[in-house]
Length: 151
Ligand SMILES: [Zn+2]
Image (cartoon, rainbow, N blue to C red):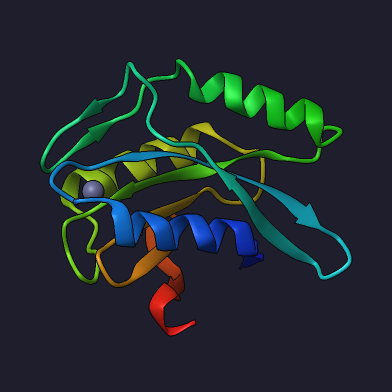
C-alpha cells in the first residue's frame, strides 16, 4: 500500500468544512491525486464539492457523475495527465467519523471498479476528526487520521 500525503490546500478545505458546514445534511465529492515519484507517495491534491444534481440528506449523500466528471477531466488536462480519480469523500455528523454499513458496501463496490492507482481512498470528515480508509483485499483499513484543529 502506498503512503498518502495531503496537500496543504486540501487540509485547508477540510478545515473550512469543519468550521463552516452545519453537518445538518451530508456533503461530499471526489478525491483527486497524483503519484509523487520523488517521495514515493500518493498526494491528495484536490477535492470536488457538491454539484447541483447530487442529493444531500441528513444521513446520506448520493453523488451523481454530473459536475464531478467535468472537474476531474479539467484537472486531468491541466496537470498534464498526472492527476487522477483517487476516491470519494463525504461528511458525517459525528466528532470522530465511523463508516456506516452502506459506506463499507459502497467503498468495496467502488474499489472493484476503479484502478487508477493501487487502491481507492475514502474520506469521512467528522466535526473534529477526519479519517481516510482504503479497501485492501476486501478489508477496510484506516490509513490516515487527521485533526485539523491540532495541526
Ligand atoms: Zn457515510
